[in-house]
Image 1 (cartoon, rainbow, N blue to C red):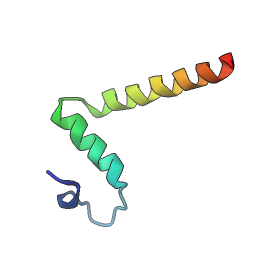
Image 2: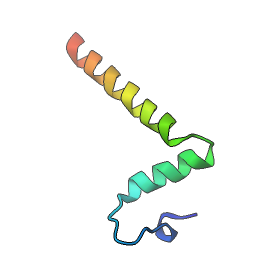
Image 3: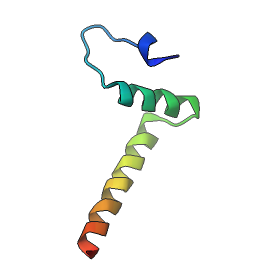
Image 4: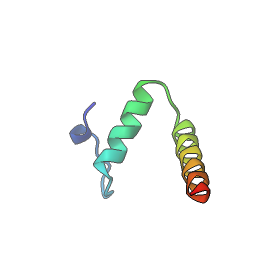
Amino acid sequence: MSVQNTSIADKNLDENWVSLMLAARKIGLSKEEVRQFFRECQENQICDKKRH
């Protein structure tokens, strides 16, 4: 399924976000697993900034 074929009426979706979620779904990741990845990434960036 391509991003162009993915639409929700009256919603303005970021194409990169839709592509990410479609790729995640294709490899079997849940929405929660994607959220967890971003949470962990954000935590690591905050920790890295505190070290400098």
